[in-house]
Amino acid sequence: MKLKFKYVVLLSVINVLNGGDEELTVQQGD
Image (cartoon, rainbow, N blue to C red; front, side, top):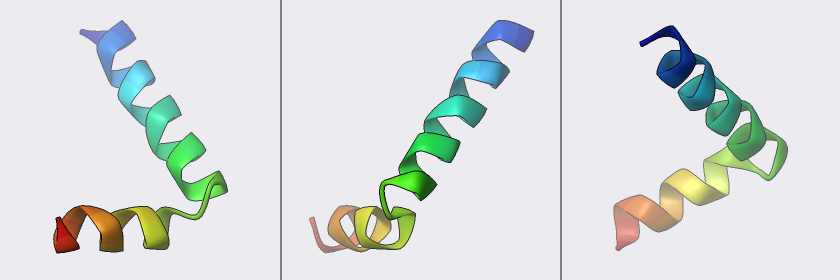
């Protein structure tokens, strides 16, 4: 469980570094 949580956090950090706002907008539009 902890490993999965860390993995989700890591993906979130990467998403923010890549421009999380834009990613969220794309997902909502889709």
